[in-house]
Amino acid sequence: MSPVRDHPASLGRQLVEQIRITGRSLRREALALIVILLVLTAIGLFEAIRGGAGLNADPELLLAVLPLALLLPFAIWRAEPAFADAFVWFMPVSRQRVAATKVVAGAFWLLVLVLLVFAWIAALALGSGGSMGETEQRLVGDASTSFTQLELRRWSPPVWLWFVPVFSALIVYLLASAALLGLRHPLRILGVVLFGGAMLLAIVFVASPGGAVGQSLMRWQDLAANGSLGYNVALTAGVSSLSDEWMRADGQTVSVWRDLPSLRSWATAMLSWFAAAVILLLAAIARHRERTG
Image (cartoon, rainbow, N blue to C red; front, side):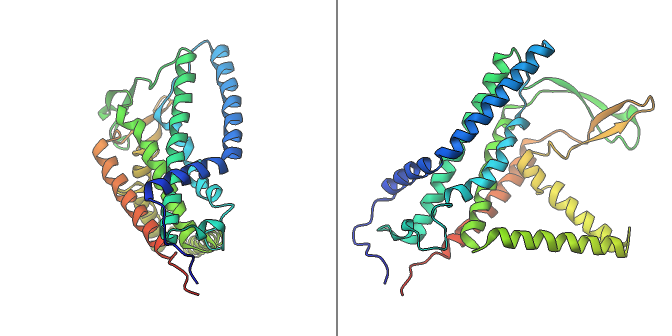
């Protein structure tokens, strides 16, 4: 029989309680993060003193939270597995509400984490005499034609670029939560998919190096990563995919940007991935219906 739910707690009260419980369950991870930040602070200050120049903070540094966003759902559900008879499933509210509020509570602490890491980066940069975002000259254009046709543009990170890691972390967190709530063995399935994909690619490229099938797969991979709705654009605003290293005639290597990051391009890709992540999460939560026997 299902648990008795004659007097369910209000949604707001349950969410506050889930935030409190989730925060307490993450104390060990928080302590480990503090230790890591202290070590990195010491290293950063040492390098600043030795180099005689302040540390400059770029928005890309905040992307370091993405691996943490990926692992956070596993830490949150570690003590109360999604497909086990854990205590959390016997609260006087529906199972789907329990799952949803627990995910939202995790998202709250993820945003706190991103804010704290941003504050740490800012304090380290400004405290060492550096700046928030370095102004530089960037070569923009198609370097495959001629270096003389490249345009030199003055570039400093716009304010919106600092919000990219925030939404990227949320997308990664929601996708990981969807996998954890929707699949009984997400790590096994992911391992099988990755191994199978790697084996397929190996067979294709060994059997037909440079063949049409291999080239087609590479084009699809590049489209998924760097297309207008690719994950590189959604998660980094294209920072990791818009530039290439080229060697000039004098032997010097320079970075050439095909284009500079665009707010419109990023927002389009980010909203598409965010919507997809929410849909997958809702589908995963829908699996946790009430048990009738």
